[in-house]
Length: 162
Image (cartoon, rainbow, N blue to C red; front, side):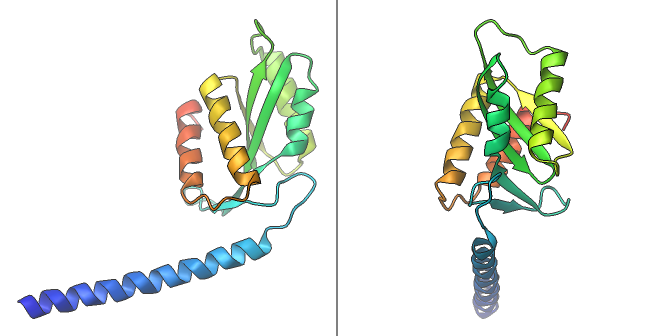
């Protein structure tokens, strides 16, 4: 019985190590494919996005600038995951997000990147803080394993119907 247990443990270890070697090759290929563009930062995180097409998590600098050009917006952080953009905005004191303001912000984000199909906007201060942290980590090129999972959890909390 002991020999069978040890044999099983050895086999499982070999399969685990073989699986890890394949992941390292994928990361190397992903890093080779990441190129800087005008609209996205150079470092992107790849995720399977709950079984949908593979998506990239990236910072949309041009969209951020477009949102900050709106009079009532003091600061903005915009991240894209595939064809979806998530914008965290900090508004001037006393400013409320109206349907008209929200529509204007969505239009500006979509205009800055025509591949986007959906735009989600929040003025929640906690979401804004987390989005800035994600953007800084992506722009710094840090190896941020788990960032995509963290980001997905944050988005689900702020936009539960998404």
